[in-house]
Image 1 (tube, each protein chain N blue to C red):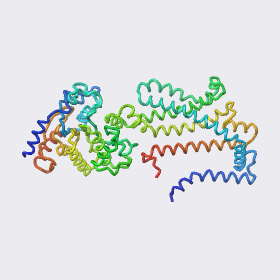
Image 2 (cartoon, chains in turn green, blue):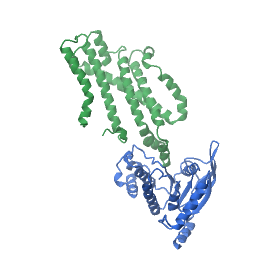
Image 3 (cartoon, chains in turn yellow, red):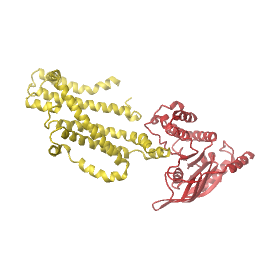
Image 4 (tube, each protein chain N blue to C red):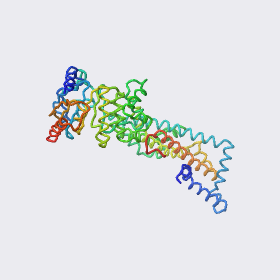
Length: 256
Length: 253
């Protein structure tokens, strides 16, 4: 009975089940609305905020920050990863330093970041960028290094120039590893976003949540948390779809 | 065998070396892998190199392909010294080295000399090895023999005058090996490029080659011309005699 619909619905069984339990406990009055509002209340808050136009605004701002940081940090990580993966001398020069910086927890650097960048958008963007940079960098280097050298030899033997070799052998060969790095980077991106939006922000989901906390609007707080969970899940799902499309030649990724 | 004599004469007339290896030695650190090798590969010739594992035959092939450079001596291609990858030759390994992320057709088309007619050339090469209907498949679902056939098609699509085969049939089962040997010979007969075949299978060498060279510890120790008519009967007295002689020499080392 392993049909496609069953395998798609099963992952939702647990969350929806928990949701049902939660709602029934709240309705029965066992869970106080002040401690933990019911799912219906959270949904209600969501609808209300959408009507006032606040929720779409926050969502947009958060999305903007996240995607800009991902684009910059990801591109830099990818490019440096390629260079260090391919060139022995570049690797010897740069990798050690990158590893040293990597081990500094970037969230712990927030006070420094505020000193350098102030409390404006640059600070938040900077945090997200370095958060995203390292997983993508490492996985790109690893991806390039783990390409079968015979494939490169074969490419050279068949007259592929540097660009041809890069486009036909190196990039596709490193892609599985890079995509893993991307999934990891997305997780870090959400984490950084949540924290970054608590630094003197006036929009974004993090701000919305912090603000609601100050006003004891627990339902909005919960809404914020749920949104983070949903958005994180969506981003991961999109990456998995990307994986399945880009890596469809690999029998390990074919879910059929 | 008058036909054999005629063939020999034609070969003599046509004897313009495609590749010349001149007093070539190769060292990896302290280890001398090749010692003063002199060798010629003619146009339209099928040359086999046999020897034990580690005798240096693969290194010799890589030198001909230009992916290794000689420590001493030089490799000449059409009279000119070889620097860098040999554009005139294509290498085929024991593993097919197909790009897993390209379709069969995509892999073969990579080798085609002109971008515009890539697909046509590739399809033609695939038909020659009998895999035209697999053009859109991913390499990972093909059997070992099929993958090697695609690798052969790729080498054909490049339309290179010299094919360097490094134990290409080593990983295949006996039956597939026989079929592939027949396929290689048929295509070689039709297209008449040169082949240097490195193999540990002496019978394969005697069945396919015009000349068989035996290598031992980096040196060429025996050379035999095979003047038997094609396609060769592996059970004929001449065949068996040659095979035994070469095999004996290989075992001796």
